[in-house]
Amino acid sequence: MPSKLIHDCGRILKDHGLTIAFAESATAGRLASEFSLCADSGGVLKGGLVCYDAQVKENVLGIDPDLIQQFTPESEEVTRELAFRLRSLITSDVQVAVTGLTTPGGSETPQKPVGTIFIHILIKERSIAVRNVFYGTPEQIVLLAADLAAKTIINELESSESE
Image 1 (tube, rainbow, N blue to C red):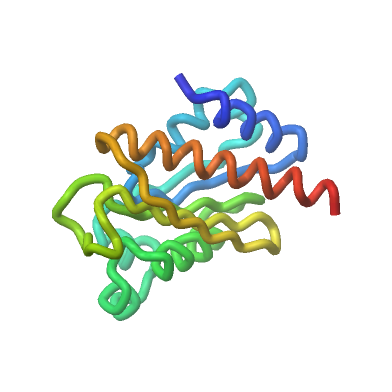
Image 2 (cartoon, helix red, strand yellow):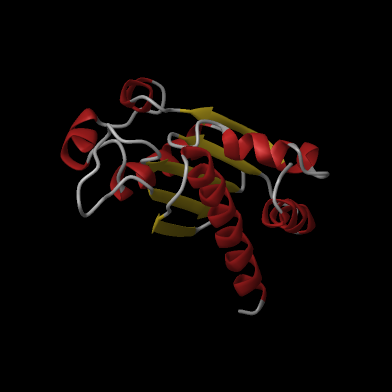
């Protein structure tokens, strides 16, 4: 069952007449799945791509292998590029890309430990980068990342209303 943040985000997207799409690496489709369970999902969710492996990032989403080599598949730079590439593959008002490390064995370092999540969100002309480190099981990290994405979208849409 989706969290209150996911439900609220789905409702706010509907209220604004916006649609959403996902490019998911670390979360492996869980964000799209969570949003699909919201009451308004039919009018909000456009779809998602799971790009867990770097080859999928390269071959399906067209990410330059040199960018992945330079910054790693789980990085702010690659996540940003995923969001922009998603925009040309699935027409939506909001694009969300997620990469990160939910288990050991990736590109973790002391500066980028397991639990590090990168989210990049495009809302029309706005581009929002988020980085956070979560602690817990892989599933807990994924669910916390989903809530962070939803909260970021809610905050952006609410702040744009007051501008």
